[in-house]
Image (cartoon, rainbow over the protein chains, first blue to last red):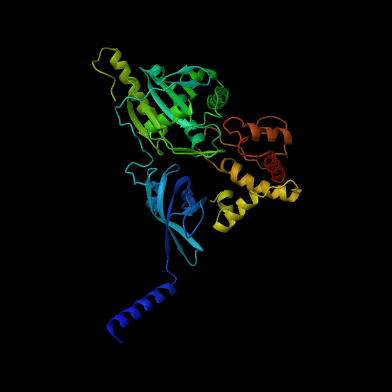
Length: 298
Length: 118
């Protein structure tokens, strides 16, 4: 037996032995986190097909790494390793990486913005809950907080959470009249086919304790599908119309009183952060009106 | 604590079964089948809000246990099948409308299941 044959035999034996062991198997998962359940160390992921393991679907996965579990948030796009053992009876996620829509790992989770801080926001005609057409430029001189929602969204950690948090921000700031006069909230629907002015009005009233006076500081609007896509691209919002629902990421944008981007939030924020940032911008307007030179602070 | 959706979706097989059953609505659906399908639809569409505590929501959606045992719904309307169906289809308050997501048969199945919740 020559050396080549010995080497071939050794390789075959190695492969057979390797194949006989109950080793962990790894597959790559790509998808979006819909829910996080710290109590059970699980995240529910709406994921693409995982060749060799599972079809595209939405299901919970355990994340054993406590730090990774803490980091990831509902709304994040992720890539991770699905580790299976014991003939796929057990499975969990490892190496959870937060990505942008092209699968690139991002340093600032959940935020994939195209316009940089300080850049001027694009202008598109928007229609509000009363059927009135307006532009973002109409809010010049005010700090504007923008979110994207759709009224049929059934995921409690997405649009209902966003709008609930906006409701709290508005309620809290309404108690500080000098700041309230200089702030504006805006929720833009990415479901213009369904979210007409009447639908948006009904939706908005649910978050305004049925008081239409609240619309003066929180408008709900839609725009045509083409402008919506351009606006979303400008703000780094990803969405996919799936007929009976819309998959989307979350972006909150703070527009400074001079019409430039002041700040982005992705999937993680607190109402306190939103309120502080809005008030900072609002107060910059006041100081400007009292004679300070230059534009409002960013 | 796992939600009902998560329990139902605890494994690839059970999840596949879940979707198969949801997709197998038929005109000749009997009462037991409708109730079972209603349970699955409830787990998918209702329990994420109505059976979970989410302090980030403006209003905590009410539990639907014993919904038909009381005379009135949480909204104050009479606890009738028609009012519940109307709420599911049109939405109410922060609850979204499900008219684009559920068929008439789906809504009937959910209401049938709600009657069993005590």
